[in-house]
Image (cartoon, rainbow, N blue to C red):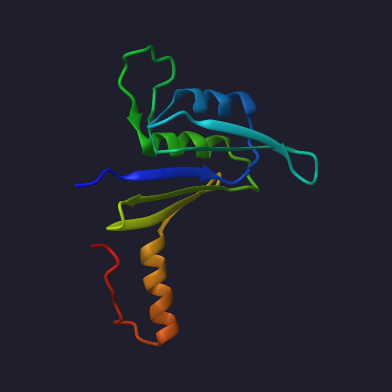
Length: 143
């Protein structure tokens, strides 16, 4: 079995509390180094984005020390949700491949009061069914 190779990237988004956001990112656990970027939007507001080659796997508890076990990824998402600005959204996009047997992408959309997930292959199948007018149409894209 081949290794899965993935990348993660977000859009630029605003936060309610910059220090809290930075605290989350310092505690985030991942396959590789997480890069955090800052930009200003067209209204002059500070925005943040982050990305890495790999995946975010969880988060250390607040006040944890080296060697402490991390919490799962859902906790990372919930902490991120607590700091995203109320009129903004985080598009947490992941894409990856296992050789060419498996190529897929996912997006988790996080707002201050909701969180939803979509899978690229599943979304593509739904779109194809609508375009074909055949709600039973299916295909295989993993080998």
